[in-house]
Length: 113
Image (cartoon, rainbow, N blue to C red; front, side, top):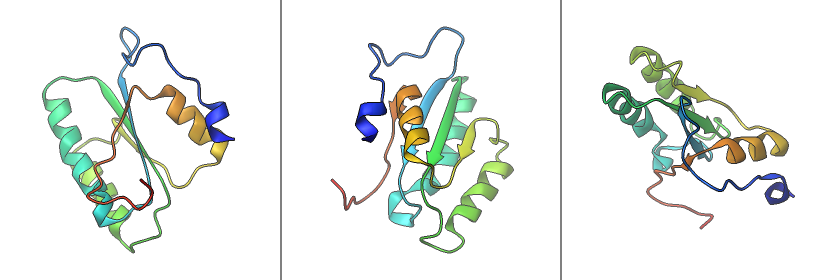
């Protein structure tokens, strides 16, 4: 089971000198608001915050949505701060959850509360 593989941290703070690890998981669709993430990251970077944001989830739900966001990431020069992953195996997903300091779900609606 996925939850059995997730290592729960005693603190959510990043280790000294390491980036804040942010995670978003979900199918790519406009109501999930992944399109907001590049601008949020631009502002974090502008404020001097050391972070890395992993975006995980199937990208085939809305044709062109993930490509537009990838292009925005590139145009803003955020390719080293944002990693876009498609669907990943459950073992890898557990690793991402275990390594995250912060989980962000900017969705305006959620079918799986």
